[in-house]
Image 1: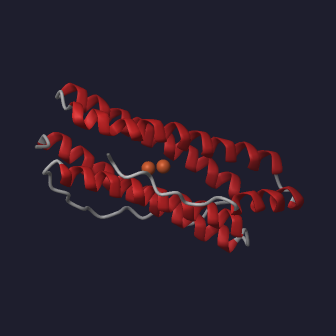
Image 2 (image 1 turned 45 degrees about the vertical axis):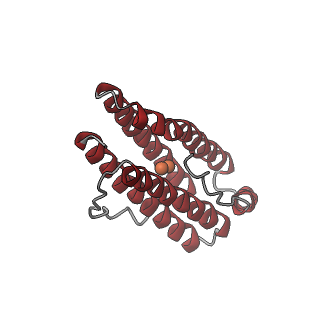
Length: 170
Ligand SMILES: [Fe+2]
Ligand SMILES: [Fe+2]
């Protein structure tokens, strides 16, 4: 049975994963508006990843006999100056998510919930990738600057990203 404090903290993170998805879907809309179909695709894949994170946590809570309670999802920002701004925000957002996941892991250790601590290892590893991929895009958009040729090439690269669902929990 899941400790009430742990359950509440994971429920809060489920909401935050859904908000993350909402934020990236909002960025997908902005890329669409800018005529960058590749950027739209990248952000849509990111949105799908965040939904899968929320689902994974949902499944964990219910597997442990806990109760999932859903809260309102905050309204995301809807406009950015351009691709670089979006990826800078994505990077800052992911750094914040990493801190939240670390707090969850710390709580799990504090209450000696080793099952949850083990479950969270997936997200700890995932956050390393999340920060790396957003940081990589900040670098690339910085290099492309305002050059149409560079942005065109970059958009083609972003178009290649595909969503791979995470492996189901063992
Ligand atoms: Fe996530
Ligand atoms: Fe993320």
